Length: 227
Image (cartoon, rainbow, N blue to C red; front, side, top):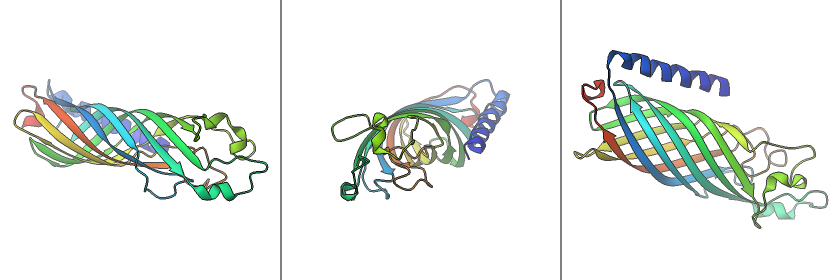
């Protein structure tokens, strides 16, 4: 899945800018985004405990139907399952709580279902990377606590990110606007809560996001976007 999503992203990226080659200019807008990030992990198997995510991004619109965004995000979520403390902890010290911080950078081609000069509805499929750290209640980094996981179970705190989102934006006459974004970040790791084999190792952890952005459009003359 990671390989296919990466190839799809590259194809969309090249297609968008190859089509834009017919025009010497194109539209872009920048945004600051804030909202909720809700984890689904082995400790928190359903999306119910909201955290926070902040983002800054630059969106390029080289032609009418495709655009490409560059996103930087930072967030924090928490997972907890108090039933874990009743397990036999003689040999292992399995964490029943996890506070996860993360930073990510990804490119995000988008396809517009509905496109008007001042508003649009579109679907995005991104490809990028995430760095994360997981802490216990005492703010200790769990990646170094080997007895909190199964024997020989180690992981990297760096992972591929395949965000899939549904977006809508609207611009006011002064070229400022609002952008609503929701979807899944799809990190390719099962260790956002430090647990895999002691939980459900068959499914990766995930993050559901709901964000609101304040955006600013930069109009460029002769842009195909304005046609």
